[in-house]
Image (cartoon, rainbow, N blue to C red; front, side):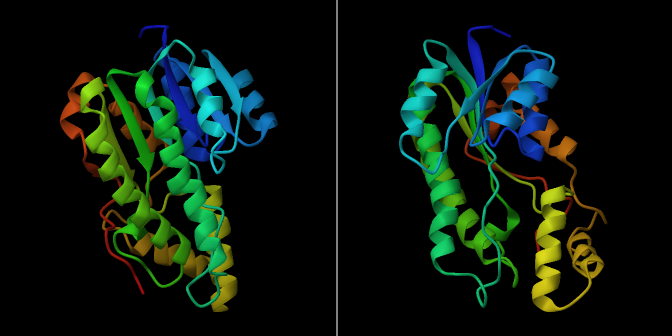
Length: 252
């Protein structure tokens, strides 16, 4: 890898983000680890083998565009990944409607801000990618925020794919569906509390949505992101990569 090339990972301290940071650093890329809190970013930089630069910034604010441009500097971007989680929960019956705007500001607005920050620095063969979710394609009954926001993100990513050909880069949307992460365990507990059932019942519901019989792992999603760094991944431009263990259907 060219040391003048960087990977920009938004949501770097999360489960998927930290996995991608490790994989990119192992491939010789300098990683700009972006997040709102400095401590976990510095811990990531300390524990990952390779070069990791912590960038404390909030993608829900337009000021992040200038912050990221300054962080990249004269280097080129080999990979830019948006993998921040959604800070909202609840069904359409219980969610505060204003929280849909909050979620959209973070995940959709944040993706657009990342794109505007790095577009002019994308390398030939560079990748712009975002992690969405299957609920944006086929919603369920319990998670209004992920359904609405990921639907908007999928639309945005298609639009962005029309604006990178001139720099020789590609755009990719990864749709893993629910993943086996601590964050999903927390979400499952909240759903269980809302419905008055046991956490294990909600977890079994998640697993039952996959024909593989289990949820995707963080390592598997990290592998898919790393796959995009291969030259042959050009052919995946504009596509949606379904990484949901055969689970593109909802249990209502």
